[in-house]
Every structure is written in structure tokens, then in C-alpha cells.
Length: 127
Image (cartoon, rainbow, N blue to C red; front, top):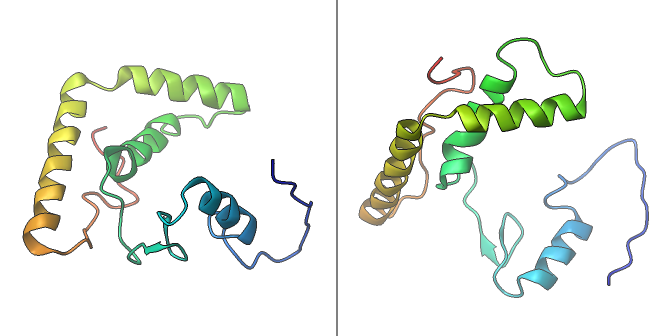
């Protein structure tokens, strides 16, 4: 088990995903295979993830969960997330999965991993 020291600072110099402690743990878990800005395999800057959760689901859920009154407690937030996941229409999930294949085809065809997100940050998708 790795021992970690507690640190406190008024100014963060690295994101939680690229902090030395995080990167050290990830390098132990994925030796020689870490895909990251500072990893063994470089991740292209400003490149959205290709996976359905990263490309679609998280933004959609955020919009739905906060569409009306914002959750007031952690438990309320968890429950609203569960409800919205259960409310996603099957057809929407099937369409999202179909889009995944299209994104992969685009990358293979063009050798370009920089994709534009299908929706703007302020778009709450299919209201």
C-alpha cells in the first residue's frame, strides 16, 4: 500500500488528474500504458473522449439533474442521478451507441482524433 502525505495549499498547481500523487498511483496500476497529458501515451489536447459516457451521457445527465431545482444534499443528488439514468429512453441510448461507431469510423478514416462535441456546453440536449 502506498502511503500518502496530506498536503494543503492555497493555490493548486496541477489538476487532480495530473498531480504527482495521482500520476504515481496510475503509473503503478498501468505501467507503460498510462494515457494522459503527462503519461506514457500522450493524450491529444482539446480532444473529447470518444466513449459514450464522456461524449454524451455526463453532459446530458448534468442538464437533467439540474434542470429544475438543484439538489440540496449529496443523497438528493445521488437519487436524482439514479432517477435520470432510469428515465433515459432506450432509443436515445441506442442512438448514442450508434454515434460511437461513427466517431470511431471518423478517426480511422481521417487519422484525426480531434472531434467536435456534438452539442454546446449550454445545450441540455433533448428537453
